[in-house]
Amino acid sequence: MRAGRLTASVAGIIALTFTAAGCGLSGGSDGGDATAGGCKVDKGNVGSGRLTGDVKGQITFQTTNLKKDFGDFFNGVIKDFEKAHPGAKVKWIDDPGDNTFTQRTVADAQACTLPDVLNLNAETATALTKAGYLLNLGVKDPGVAKPFVPAFWKSSTFKEASGSSIHTVLPWYTGGIVLTYNTDLLKKAGVDPAKPPTTMFGLFADYEKIAKAGKGKYYATMANPVWRIPADFDQMNIKTLSADGKSAVFANDPRTTQWVAWMAKLYKEGAMPKDSLSSSNDPSTLYSQGKVAYGSTNPSFVRFVKQNSPSIYAKTGVGQQPFDALGHTTGAPQYISVAATSKHAPVALAFAKYLTNAENQTAWCKDPNVVIFPTTTTSLNDPFFQKVSGDDPFSEARKLVAEQLKTTTAYQTVLSPAAQNAIVAQVQLAMQGKKSPEQAVKDAQSKVDELLKQAG
Image (cartoon, rainbow, N blue to C red; front, top):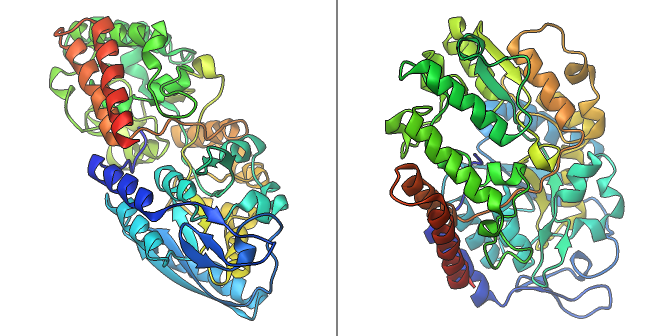
């Protein structure tokens, strides 16, 4: 599951405020006034042509909930940058990153007071790019892509108002996706831990074996489909939304109905705790108690188990989450963007590049207090990731994810919470036997279409 989704109310606010703003970009290298999202800006910040200018002036750098744990690291990065550029100053602020983050960032954009360099998630970057508030990095610095994993860079785009996909972000740090499982429970069910399934339906077949062996004493996974939608659809290469994002199309793929039918069958057969259908709890607690065979797909989960349940950690295996039809994993990175409204854009762009370069990404990802992965090719090739000693679960997870990230993309479906909840609610009805899988999928698509139409 991807974190940090917008609430329905916030999504509505974004639509209203951006519509009222008369969004878009104007101006450029041909002179005259220039605007970005309705804010007056230096003409060099928008339009065609590279960004030029001295790296001098003070900028504001905003992260999301990082200052408490990583103050020393980022203060060091800032100090080194300022030393390399004597005329530049960086003021660091840290946003709590709560569920009103996007709403508050939108308000800053409307007031023309966005921080110069921003740590953003995909949802917020989507909104700000469409409204024209972020620097078009691909145009303003054509060589900016060089350090990053090519597939990751290519897919790290968002659509501007015209519908064209542009690069307004630098991929920063990311997590990964792995299968974590209790090898003892898998063996009891006749599932070979050394041969992870390659498809979602193959994984579901293993869930079914665990249900039959567990007989209510232990389970395969949690029931709430909120953890799997739209992540499973993406991995199966089921298109959830149309290319323009204005309509739902997942019901057009017969595999969607098959997926729902599997979920209903597994729930009925006892592969999942009955009381977990609407629970927001992830598998962490039950897995640590030996009551769920499959844990979280987040590599950080392996460290959680090691710290909180050593006996279960000793039984934990790590494998490849099914690539399925997509053929590779997708990442949900955090991004670094530069505000098109920055009064010192050359400083902001220089700092954004410095922050995300291979040296700084590698240094941070080696911090023992984090379980994150870099997005630059050089970083992923570092021995820290490629020559991990030991065959313990945590080492295996690090090696596996580092290898995945060489071919991963950021092409993930971004659903509003309202749209996601509409799909989840219909799947839950099918799992309870209150609707057929076919009807649930049909109704889910209709409800999402209504929400997309309302959002404009």
